[in-house]
Length: 134
Image 1 (tube, rainbow, N blue to C red):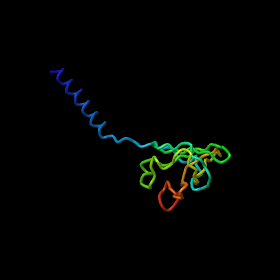
Image 2: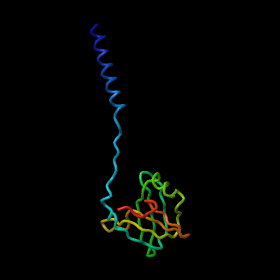
Image 3: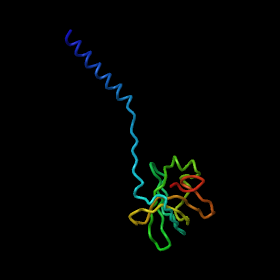
Image 4: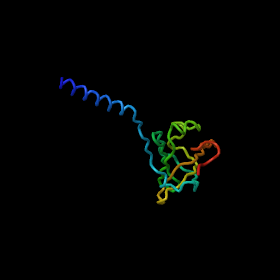
């Protein structure tokens, strides 16, 4: 009888732990935007796209300016951008674009991309119509 009681207790505890594990909700972690001068939009013209990474959790745009300086820009997630007309084919290597961005606070070449104006004149905005988010 003692072995049956121990087994019942062990099984009861295991069932309780399994139930608690199923009820737990995964947490969401995200990095800060403190590295960017958020809301302080700057513009760059005649940037040549090197690479457009359509990746989660953030997209990345790598470009070169007319002086040959390399720049890197973080963007919103593909899931967010598709709602505003972006796609993995929005930008292509060699394409010359104008863009706006929130600069990095440490003065490196890069920041958070806000808009891109393509050679045909269309402008894509990371935050949709209405412009930048402050």
